[in-house]
Image 1 (cartoon, one colour):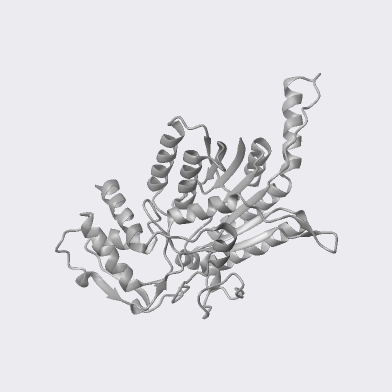
Image 2 (cartoon, rainbow, N blue to C red):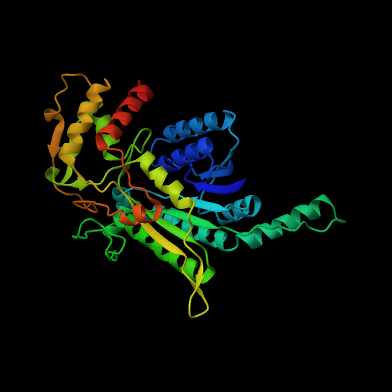
Length: 377
């Protein structure tokens, strides 16, 4: 079976990816999945525990694929190296990161540790993966018998590293839709700067060490069991508490919302097609490196988004039919680090993988509202 590492496996996207791989395997074959997550308290860890419980149920349901969860931190280099040596990963999907634009303004250290140092550890382990696996095999054989030579290994190393980038890298770009060909050298938050740094690091490692890497710029991911710091989830919590929700830029923001199942579909397709390895005129590898947008390409006005959300919350009986939404809305100015619009040009994803996100905002928010009702009662 192919060995796959999914970091951030208790996170929103990571858990959904693991569930998909357990259910369907990869390219029609069962897989051995290792999940790594530090289970930090950036938001309620019980939601991460819930996601892990869903994974464990799926893994125990007579699935041929396997899942092994490791609680640990990407910044722990010895741990990362040990996992690569022991499990001989064929594919690495790095979804672990400190998320959130606003949080980065007050807590920059968390972003440097996770998004910079953690990603560097993944790159280094991918670089040395074959060497580490060979050494581990020799060590294991030596422990079993001093008279037996170490078994040979045919492990070829990491064949594809996929990592999460973000639409935040586009910063204050005025041209829309955002294309991966656009200049992204002017981030307006530390979070965005770390994600752009990930892309630069990956390019260097692809060039110098011939590691196929693909970065995925996600656009406002949402859905059931999502992150509570995201607007749709936070708004719902506040409305239930009879609090007022604040709509930034006086409601003139537009977001390219992408349902989590569409994100996972995009990741799975990308996993199966690593950038091609080639040699350049300088004798060094032409970087097997790609970056794609994954977004719906249909930005929604925040006021329309709030209207659809409230309609679906009423439909799911999360809120009463006569709830006074107007009394609970407040239009406020733009906040630091935010951008007025996100809008994905996903033509390259469609061209190379035959896929464009399809789930509408209403359909996605309906799934969220129904899950919220069930989860919180």
